Image 1 (cartoon, rainbow, N blue to C red):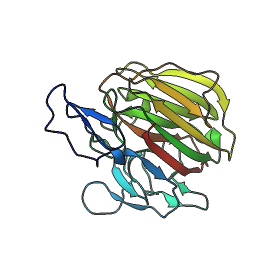
Image 2 (image 1 turned 30 degrees about the vertical axis):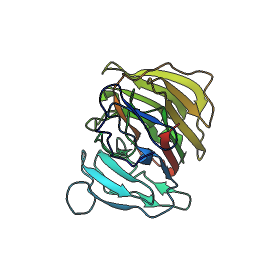
Image 3 (image 1 turned 45 degrees about the vertical axis):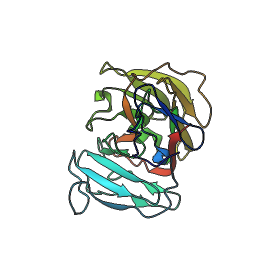
Image 4 (image 1 turned 90 degrees about the vertical axis):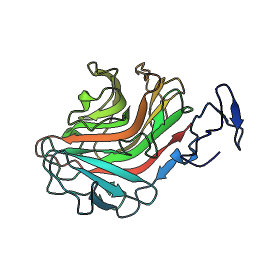
Length: 261
């Protein structure tokens, strides 16, 4: 495959170019081998303001950056935070921040279509994202969601995204939540549960045609949901959480991977 960001500008409509590995590229499709990311959250994060030089900030709506060994994350502040940056723990990175009522954050790989780890339905081959993490106290999560959502401006309320396909841990219940074309959120209870201090893997797979498969610990839940992203939709993996009153939830990220299936 060729490097990220290279276009086959010499192609005319209907022409096909072959690149190493046998992949065919037609009509200026961008081939992006660098969209594969594997992050183990095993190094102290470097955090700062997204725009300009300076320290991370904690006012609602602020956007910061978290730089790790193998990935760069944006995080959008929800509520007012006095702890403004994730911290390194014994088994991963603690992203809980203040852990108070209605405080939280959204982490994603960026809201530009040119960010690493961003995919286009119908153009990208089939892709996926998975996240392994621990929740110390599941009763303290109003939302704890992972999946794909449309590349658009950050929303304070997860239900306000235009398109989304995610697994959401709500007070220990693992639910599927989907949004299509700014309609109401559709919630499906997988009947699977998350216990205090447990570690699980959530994974969302998207076919080249946009058909989504939800997986928990490597398996499709017995109760699942059907969902298909619109053709041409540009999507990014994201992780969103909100705490409840007097929260003690320790949310520890342990492993993340995304790329082509």
